[in-house]
Amino acid sequence: MELVTLADIRAAAALIAPAVVRTPLLRFDEGLWLKPEGLQPVGAFKVRGAYHALARLPEDVRARGVVAYSSGNHAQAVAYAAKLFGVPATVVVPDTTPRVKVEATRSHGAEVVEVPPAERESRAHELAASLGATLVPPFDHPDVIAGQGTIGLELVADLPDVATVLVPVSGGGLISGVAAAVKALSPATRVVGVEPELAGDTAASFRARTLTGWPAADRARTVADGLRAEPSPLTFAHVLAHVDDVVTVPEDAIADAVRRLAFRSRLVVEPSGAVPLAAYLASPTPRTAAIVSGGNVDPATFLTLLA
Image 1 (cartoon, rainbow, N blue to C red):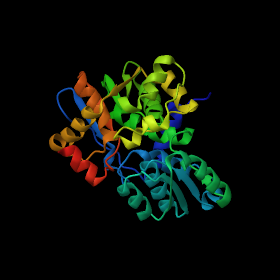
Image 2: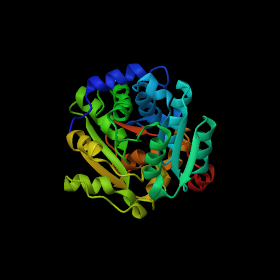
Image 3: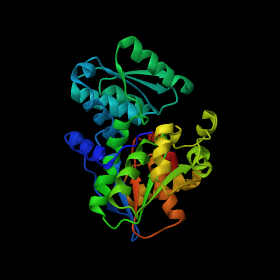
Image 4: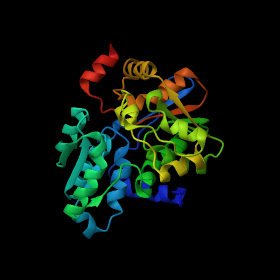
């Protein structure tokens, strides 16, 4: 299976530069730096991969529109990228998606289709076929992975002596791209994926060195709604090639991390973006960077977590 390369990621960085924010590194304590991807125009890192995937489409193909399926952040990213390119977008989301993510996606002009969680991918494929549009998957595509990998380029440029990079893991597009970039630029740096204990399928697969899979109902138990997907053969191949470890964190540690980011770093962060801090707090190490992947949290959920 062909993996994304550093050259691919550097080319992606040039293509997406007009549409994304080069997020800073923020000091959390003496050992940890945060990379706040919630500062992106759609409130999450997903805009990097989505914009890159659309930018790589031939103009006549892109003009026919795009379709995506998502738990929320990729939905917004595809809708935003389609708006920038002036093409139609249809996005399929689970009917359990936080309203803040659904309304934000509609605000960018996309048509949103809500379905039971188990149907989102199949419905997206059906819509793409019926509309003659291109399906832009949330993680299982080299262009999406390369776009997400631009985070790794920025991180190593800003912190060349970084010893450990902590990355949230769901479908695996983010950690695939970040690990590919970081390991190419700084082979000694450890790249560690972080998942909720209640959605620890990648950690289990990593230990087994093969995809094991967890039932969707089990993965749906975590408050980290953006981390309920499971990796594909493509993203898992990147994990096996480049990632040093995958660890899990409990729900109470995720909530504590959300609170600390709010009160200490003044960052509004969704639970999915807080899991790397939860892992760091459980086992602090020097010269660590945590990718805080997004800030699109449901207001009621956020208030509950702060309390």
